[in-house]
Length: 335
Image 1 (cartoon, rainbow, N blue to C red):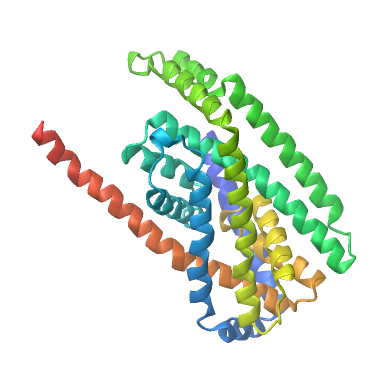
Image 2: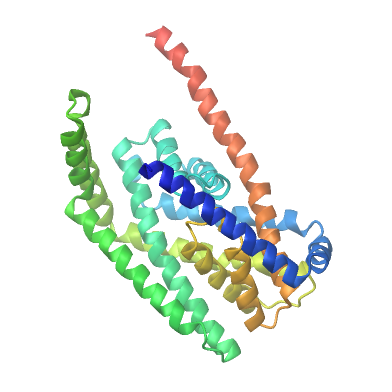
C-alpha cells in the first residue's frame, strides 16, 4: 500500500473512531437532554459567532505586528486572510494546516513579497504554539486553584513539555536553515532544470525567517496580542454558559476554554476533533461542576459557530480566487 493510501486510511479510521466516541458520549449524556440544552441557548449561537470575530481580529493584529513597516500589509486585509485561513482549517479537514498555507498565499497575491509572506506565517505559527502552551499552563493553575483537583496536572505537564521540546526543535531547525536543506534534497531527487532555483528560494526563505526573528519587539507584540486573543476567546464560553443557564464566571469560562483548546490541539489528527473535543469539555466541565449535558451542548455550540463563521469565510475565499482567475486572462491580454 502506498504512503498516500495509508495516510487516507488512517484519517478515515480516526474519523470513524471519533464518530463512534461522539455517539457514545451523546448517548451517555442523553440525546434529548443535550438537544434541550442546545435549544435553550437559542439564538445565542449567533452572538457567539459574532463575538468570535474579535479573536480573529486580535490574531490578525498579532500577525500584523510581525511585519516590518516597509512591507506591512493593511490590517483589514490580514483580517480577512486570517478569517479565510481559520475557516479552511476548521471545515476542510483533509488539509489540517491548509489554512496557514492559504493565508500565506493570499498575502502574496495581494502584494507582499513571497518570502516575507511565508516567513511571517511560519513565525506566527511558531509563536502561536508557544503562547498556547503558556495559556494551557495558566488554565491548569487556575483549574487546580479553583477545584483543588490535580488529576490533570501530570498529563498536561507532560504534554506541555513535549510541546515545548517540539517547538524548540522546530525553532532551531528554522535558525539552521531547514528550508534550503529540504529544497536541496528535493532538487537532487527531481533533477530538473525547472527546479534548479528551488535551493536559492529556500535560502532566501531561511534568511527572511531569521530576519523576522531578529525583530524582538515584533515577536513580543505578537505574543501579547495572541495571549489577549486566547483570553478574550473565553468570552464565547461565557456567553454559551450564560445562555444555557449555568450561572458562569469568567474564570470558569477561561479554564474551560484553555483546557478544551489543549485537548483539541492534541487531537489534531482526528478530523474535526470529533468526539475528542466533546470529551475535553465533559472532563473539565465535570471538574468545574458543570452538568454533562451542558458541557456537551457547549461543544455543539462551538461547532455551530465554526459553521456560521466558516462557511462565509470559504465563500469569500472562492470569490477572491475567482476574481484573480478572471483577472489573469485580462492582464495577459493587456500585455
